[in-house]
Image 1 (cartoon, rainbow, N blue to C red):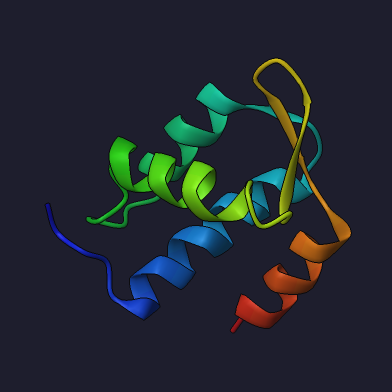
Image 2 (image 1 turned 90 degrees about the horizontal axis):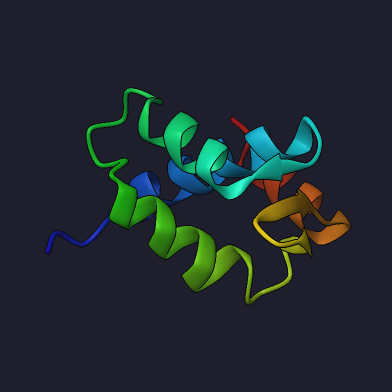
Length: 84
């Protein structure tokens, strides 16, 4: 298993949060679009790890209903901080 460096991790988190900023989105759409982002490191496992292992438990994203998620105010602040 390859570990992501800080820059790659931030890029992936930014990609996920940008998708969520557009509105309520289903997990499968997040996964597909993030994996298609042209980042070589954006695999299904790395997206899942960043989403379920960091963004969701730390309150940047919240579950609205089964499989449906949205960005939180805290997530919007993180997205601003991660934006170039």
